[in-house]
Every structure is written in structure tokens, then in C-alpha cells.
Amino acid sequence: MKYRLNILLLVLLATTAQAQDRVTNVTTSNLGDRIIYPEFSVPATTLSINDSRISAETSGRILEVPVLVGDRVNQGQLLARLDCRNNQARLQQVQAALQAATARNILANRQIERTLSLRQAQNVSEELLDQRESNLDTAKADQQAQQARLVEAKLEVQRCQILAPFTGIVMQRIKAEGEWITPGQSVIHLLDSERLEISAQVPVDQVSSLNNASSYMLTTNQGSFSLKLRHVLPVVGKRGRNREVRFEFDAEMALPGSTGRLTWRSSIPHLPADIPVRRGDDLGIFLAVDGTAKFHPLPNALEGQPTPVDLPVESRIIIEGRHALNHNASIRTDENPACCPSAGKE
Image 1 (cartoon, rainbow, N blue to C red):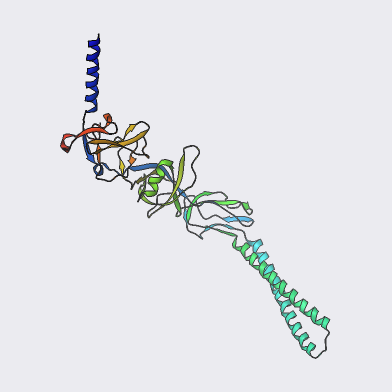
Image 2 (cartoon, one colour):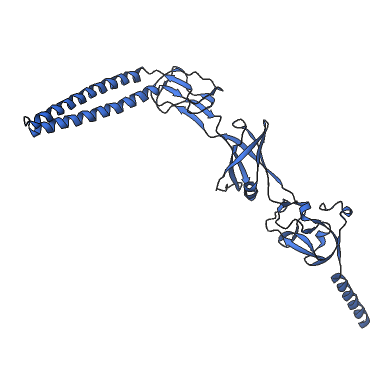
């Protein structure tokens, strides 16, 4: 029995020594040969900055709506014309009132001039002079008030013509000819066709690559369009844990309301998703250093996604054989790149 125990002990010792001295054959590659710059893609929509319902600013009956749904109108073009006879009558009244106020102001000026002349000869009292000065001040104030009313009356006449505040497309005729309209009621639904933005929901973990990208493209059924990043909203969505990002068209624009895919390519070096391996709670890669496998954790690595890496491009990473390795394991490197056609695909 004692003899058997001795034999078993010798076998265990030999096995342990063999395990300690075991060298794993691996193949390696320069990190620079494995670097990729991954492309990301998310849904995106083209939005108009101005999607407005153009309202009346004065009351009146609509005489004319010269635009139709689908028409493209320029800024300042007539959208609707109202019956303006009441406003024009009020304008004439204000003009007449201003003429009367101007006449009173002229009279008050002449009276104060005569009073001052008589005052020098001491032929009028101080009280009369004060009264003339008061009349002049009143006349001036009345004239200024009538001038302000004249400006307002002219605006009321101008408001009888409802003009396009921006270049756009007529989406709806809300009111028709012959209808009575009051201030604040919408007449035309107008969509801005020149000031467009692109909205996209980007996952939080991809925002960094988005900010560092050098170019952005929107691809729709109309083609591809170059974009410029305008702003990443400083808010994380409650449901999708995304951040909204707004872009502007760089040159040619898609149609308002177009949907498609926003794509960008990261400018940060990445490793393909199948190269990192997990050891414990960490994802990382094995480096070949003087015949030893060194596990290098990649703190930003995510399972199944390309991984950012900031090691020197000449670093030797272990490709084949990496799944069986542990930190500080002894390795034998096969330097013949032709030996390993499946490298990186195990």
C-alpha cells in the first residue's frame, strides 16, 4: 500500500512539473495589422426648423388665397388678401386727426413767439406766458400721439395682406376665400423648405465615436447627403438611453420629412469584436512579451462590439491559441504568417 502511494505521489509531482514547464504554441500579429475603423449607423429624420401655421393679424373677410397646396412660395410672397376697406377708412381718419394736431402745434408755436415778444415789452402777464407754453406742450404731445396712431393704422392696412415669412411649401389651406377671419386664426400651413436639420437618436456608448468622427452621411431613397454636426443634446432619453443629435446639411439637401440612416466612421483605432477574450470580469487581449503571454485589459471593451485600443501599433498580439492562455503563461511564437490562415477567426 505504501509503495502505491509513493508511485502516485511521483506521478502527481511529474504532472505538476510538466504543467509548469508547458509551453503553448501561438501565432501573433502586429496590432497595426488588425486595426479597423468601424462604421456606425442609426436611423435619422430630416426636420424643418419652421413648420408654421400663418395667422391673420387683423380682422376681415378673405378676398383671395392665391396659393395651392404643394406650391413653393418665396419669402414675402402673398398668401392671402383681406377686405381692407375698414382699415383704410381708419387710416384716413388718423391722417386727418394728425393734420389737425399739426395745425394746432403750428398755432401754439406762433402764439408763444408773439407772447415772448410782448413779454419783453412787459405788455403781457407771466400767467399768460405760462398758459401759452402749456398750450404748446399739449399741442406737441397731441401731434406725437397722432403720429403713433398713424403708424399703427398703416400697419393695420399692411396686415390685410398676409405674406410668407420664409421660403417654404404650402402644406394646407386652412381658410378659404369668403370666410371672415379674426386675429390669431390660421390661414395657411407653411413648411420651411430651406432651413432643415437632421435628428438622430444615438446610443450613449457611441456618442464619443460620433464626436470624434471626421465626416457624417445621411442615406435615403433620394441618395446620400453630407452632413455637419451641429449639437449633441445634453440629455439622455429615459426609454432608449439615447442622446438626440442634430445635424445640418453640408451642401445638397434631402426633402423635408425624409427618413434614412445616419452613418459615420470612427477616427479612433479599434480591434475587431472577435479578438478580445474574457478573463474574470475583464475583456482584453494577450500580448506576446519575451516568450510570455501578458493579459492586457481593455476597460472600454463591450461584448460583441469593436473595441477601442490605444497600444502602440507595433505591439505583438496573440491571435491563435489565445483562448487557452492565462496571464504570464509561457508561449512559443510561430513567426511564419503563412502558417495561420485562420488567425483571428477562431
